[in-house]
Image (cartoon, rainbow, N blue to C red):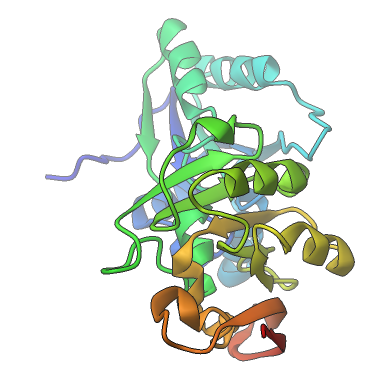
Length: 290
């Protein structure tokens, strides 16, 4: 017996859209979108999934789509208004899907929306989604944990107080929404056990047409990001697992093998098209440390 029966009229379903690729939307999420009468959609991940789904269907979805997408520093539809929209539409007796990028419960304010809808006496459930924290890192070939390299990981935002985060380079840190605070975050993390030579990767526009990977260390990543004009959306991965990425091209061999020749990566760029990831090309500029 499934835990996700068809949605009832007059209810709200929070659906995780994943990182913005239709293939990473769950089957339950797909069925919910096809049956929905109203879709309240985020900007990142959610709108892209809707566009891809409609293109695949060759027709628009039957639902009314209400765009509540936020941009960095600009929230045209405040969270209180989003909460009110969900309640208002459900009270009309409609099947309402709240389509959120990534996973609703990973820095997505899903808990706040659930609490508000429940307080209004409306039935509400959550369909988990694939968070960008692991999916975008995987796109760049970076495992968040790896035997002998990293045994744990933490997901944080660029707004968090990273100074309270313990652990060394074997404790992977994934920073979401962190491009704007990159300089500060790198400095804070470098002061701890990780050190300024701890490997870092920034993956921009994961699963999008402008996907790009920049590799550096906590001591150099802000310089490389500024030089290359790194922009949101992006995730930042900090720790020795970055050395396992094929885009690092052996730049941090010594992190795994102290006897090996040490290289410092100044940057690794990777570009690809959504239609053909296998055609990706990348360049690496490596400087030998002597």
